[in-house]
Amino acid sequence: LTQGTTFFAYTDGVTEARHPGGELFGAGRLKDMLNENRLSPRLLCQHLYLTIDRFTSGAEPSDDTTAVAFGKRDACKSMSFRIISHPAYISLVREAAGEILGPGADPKIVSEIQVALSEAISNVIRHTYKNDQTREIGIDMNLDTGTFRAIIEDRGQRVDPSKLVGRALEDVKPG
Image 1 (cartoon, rainbow, N blue to C red):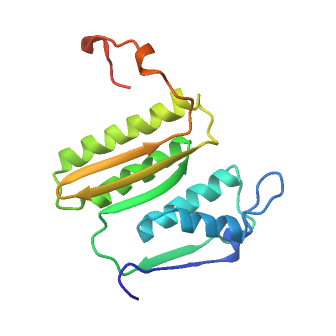
Image 2 (tube, helix red, strand yellow):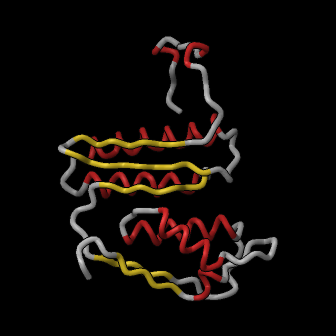
């Protein structure tokens, strides 16, 4: 494989996963998911399994559901992907940040970044989308010259910052 190439293989159980309403996951939905997400091979498979689980509403699969991905890559310094506004996807965001920051990063800093990302995604789900677990959230992360950057994009209603009321720092509690 050439640098940056990912090989992806799957069984028919992926495309034949069935929504409770009868609709199949389908090759088109799989192709769109693969084209819209720049993730490491491991996280690409994790994202697929989460997406199928949400699509089927957690129903037992009627066929084997297997996917494998591998590739030739340098250390991953950026990832861009879309998730559904469901708490199950928070672990995917945390793991992506951990992979980008790499094994040599200070574990305390990695943990703090992961907690901040978890809180930000949770706030989008809870406050912006009012717990509607069907909406999309865009994630773009990169590490460039020692600076980690994460952009979280939602499609919620705009808020007028001049109407926001702050609180004293001592009144702010975790969560």
